[in-house]
Amino acid sequence: MKTWQNLDELTLTNHYADLPASWYHAIEPTPLPNPRIISVNSMVAEQLKINPCSLDPQALADWLGGHTLPPGAKPLAMKYSGHQFGVYNPQLGDGRGLLLGELPVDGDYWDLHLKGAGQTRYSRMGDGRAVLRSSLREYLIGEALTHLGIPSTRALAVCVSSQKIQRERVELAATILRVSRCHIRFGHFEHLYYTRQFDGLKQLADYCLARYYPDCQSAENPYLAMFLQISQRSAEMVAGWQAYGFLHGVMNTDNMSILGETFDHGPFAFIDRWQENAVYNHTDQEGRYAFDQQPGIIQWNLSALGQALTPLVPIDDLKDALEQFTGYYETAYRQRMSARLGLATPQPGDDELIQRWRNLLAQHQADYNPLYRALSEAQQDDEGQPGLNHLDLAPWQIMLNDWLPQYRQRLQQESRHAADRRSAMLAVNPAYTLRTHVAQHLIDRAEEGDYQPLNDWLAILQNPFDEHPGFEQWRRAPDTKGLVMLSCSS
Ligand code: AMP
Ligand code: MG
Image 1: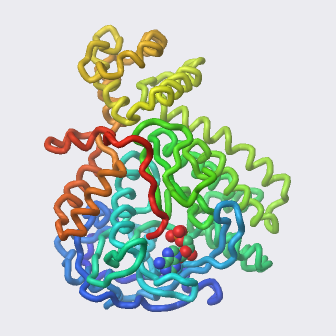
Image 2 (image 1 turned 45 degrees about the vertical axis):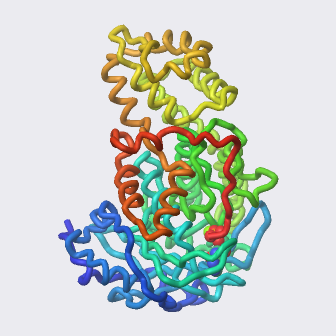
């Protein structure tokens, strides 16, 4: 077991820098003026075994502002390509983020990626920067998802600078230090495939096998085994999105991690009032990445990855593997939804019950997540019946009248005591999520220089199943009608 380390003692290693030089652009961050740390994620620090007392804000600001590098860092921008809105784009790569290196912790390596670090060879027309708005959104959603049990990249800290940058309006430049075991995207494989670097493709696949999928190395075709695991993890990730009403927004293949983690968060949203075909990204006019399209798009993205693996795996095997996605997804989704509805022992007919529930939510445009919370709290009746007269269910009673009899009957097949079901449901149905208007409120306050709400919410999102007195007003959907569209610019 590794002992705790102080921030100033961390030494990075760099396995990716040992791969062919044409796969990346080695470049140092471009310093930002007056960097200032506005939030530190002590849970991520703990995961990295960094002594919390050593997290000196000034030292961190020097790192995140691009003024100093941790010992051993060999910063680099990764080259990748990808399908954006279904169209292949060869011209991608880290245009504003740098992999600084990796931190070895207990036999694992954690990539440290500085997002907003300045221009690279892959910046195209971009300024290499990230604004405070998008940095805060990414920082917070990583926590919100992680604590719902949905895999996501996270970040150690957020830094704001005095530098002003132009988006739809002038905004402040910021950085986050993104932390994940992996920054390899589907697009890394696509780049090598479409440039016909098949030896390189094999080298990358071997690198991923050794590092992320060692169990697959002994399979008859290790690359196929790895593809199946990537499919399964991706299916589990998107099942989590669908069960909790999370919309990613830009599911391009360059935003897909080969670890099945939610990655490169942009115009994401939790759905407030239920709508199956919700779209929040205002550039997604055709609704390619609409909420109800997400599982199908993940499968499409996996087919793009599969295509890139054709030099390593027979195409028919890849096609068969791709067909397993639906099974992986349905299993994972059923598990998630059953847990949310308090169904511990699977029964025939559960899929139909869940589907009827979803239809009802859509028909009434229900405020999605609070309804599960209310349903959890209503599981008080000693006879295993939802306490229909429970105060919190009252606003939804008319809508639920259609469905509750079936649900009540179903609960009778459960052997678990209602009180146990209640606590199990309260542990998977959050009281708080990162709704769009909450994120906007935190951004507005941070832009005014008030970082307290941001840090209060960091703690709330890390404990979303607890009550947080004083924040109740943020539990409900806002009164605004229709969807608030989000900009892709970040
Ligand atoms: P994203 O929409 O953040 O997934 O980015 C898509 C591509 O555009 C990636 O290659 C990014 O590195 C690049 N990119 C996005 N914003 C910027 C920026 N401000 N400066 C340079 N490159 C950027
Ligand atoms: Mg991206």
